[in-house]
Length: 334
Image (cartoon, rainbow, N blue to C red; front, side, top):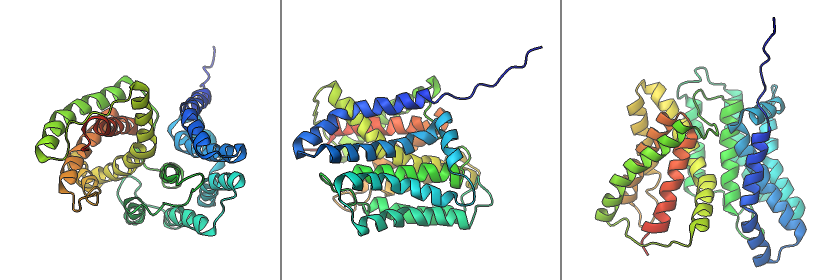
């Protein structure tokens, strides 16, 4: 009689994803190196900081890496460990660029520590529902993103706001995976047929509504800026990592997920999260930009549908990135 052994997830897929992303962004890094005449030590530190933040972003989404990271984030000081991990990329950046400023460090701690603290000191009782702790975290995080309060932390060789966006994604992913585990978060790198079909289907539905509506409202116009497939794909990848994952993690994985269970209705939760997502865009010029609010709310509904039917945040993030990339490539007004 043989006893079947359970295979542990391999770390090689995670390694491959990180290596692939590192290779994809090497031309961008080389461009920065050439444009700003950076010393090699500074370039290596900046790229190392970027890759470490990517590791934090990807690791919770892949089983083997999530398990390994879970062995580090343990015990009663989990929040402190996560905070230390989040600050480490900035330390690496500073080591190579000598761009240390107390104000920048304090701002990073101020963004992350209150989120980790409230979840640690006041653990949620019903993990599946929207609690007062979640409301407090939302109220804390939204202004940071809405008013770009993360600007000016990474300044060598120029303002690198994408680092701050990766920092915030990492904060959410680590918090809602290890500190306040969120049931059905869907934070998985799952390129299944179901996930891809959900993204593609909802893109078609949204495009059928948004393209004519955007033209009628005067929000968009046909203005193609096609510079080749490689440029389109790189822009898509940048939007996916620096915009879509952050917003989908918050609005779908966190907000819609909890609202659906709290309201005991998937469509009410999805509708409310979509409207909040739409209002998130009201500050775009010209203020108040109600046309953007309307179209973003409709987009939010289809992002939410992709999230539900695909069973993973990857579906809504892929859809979100495609919508933004197509819009910026073909429909932004000149």
